[in-house]
Amino acid sequence: MHAQPLHPLDAIVVDAQIARLPKVDLHIHQEWSPRLDRVLARRTGHLAYDWRSWVEQLMATTPPGMPRLRQLATIHPASKAADSTTEHVIARLEDLFREAAQDGAVLVEVRLGDDTIVRPDCLHAFREAERRVQQHYPQFHAEAIAILRQLHEPHHREHIVHACFRAAAEGLRGLDFLYEPYDTEADWTPIYHIAERATAVGLGITAHAGEFSRANLHAAVRTPGLTRLGHAVHAARHPDVLEQLAQRGITVECCLSCNVVLGAVETYDKHPIQQFRAAGVPVVLGTDDPVQVCTTIGREYAIAHMLGLGVADLLAMTRTAIDVAFTTVARRTQLQTAVRAWNATN
Image (cartoon, rainbow, N blue to C red; front, side, top):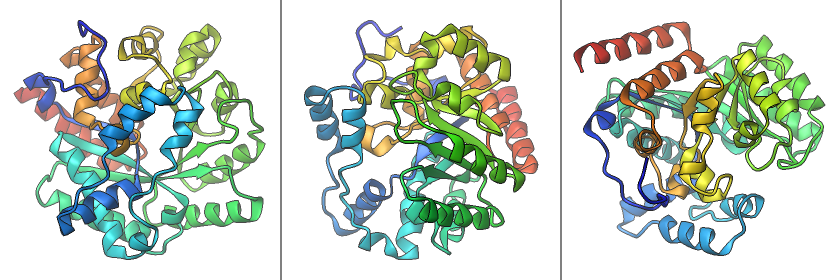
């Protein structure tokens, strides 16, 4: 355990074994604007947006919970116009993949937003970015899932759903539902209908729920085909929800740094990741919005180690992540074989 409360911006010394571990990130958003801003800044020699200062100010001046989450969505240092070319989409995805691969990631599952998933070149760009990174990190793999926000009127929402189903034929692997209202109970009936159709075409199902309150946890668990939950922090405060997650084997995607930055938990030491494990709930790690909250998947594994997870625990978590990832049988087998080989030689 860390002697003093660790701040999300603190430098940490990463144990050599933890640094070498094969890692999986099952909860990461594409962050199209912050990523593209970094790419363009490098190309032009300008400074990218200062997210470290932003995090400091956010945590010092904005109440935790939804106010911070809303602030997260207000800053777009790169414009939509700049993101209009296929090469720029490839470049920002390549930036994401390369950062993860450098930290030892063997798999990342990236959430693509509405504007990206409706592009006809979406999956082509995704695979080209993966190919470029694999030239230097052959162990690295990536899968695409779509995040479906229930903010649109039904006709537009259906347009996005159809785009997801078309993309499924090209390699989209899953849907992540993010419902509004997010921190109070919502009507999930439209979600259930979409999820039934999505599972019929082979898409995996996860959902954001329980980040800032208990709201929507029970509704999310009832989603057809759901096998994972993003955040679910408040599930740990309610034994009935914990029991339901454990009984159904629903995996919680824990995003330690983002949960602290946005105020879902006050400090890392108060994160319920160990409560989930003690209750028999499978857990995996994710970075959520790593550019904006100044983290990487390597840092998240290192923080989990500080919270009491040993090397064997973290390696088991990587294996769990591969088991529950939205990927092909062949890729899952390949990744598990690689992890076993790593363990045999380390």
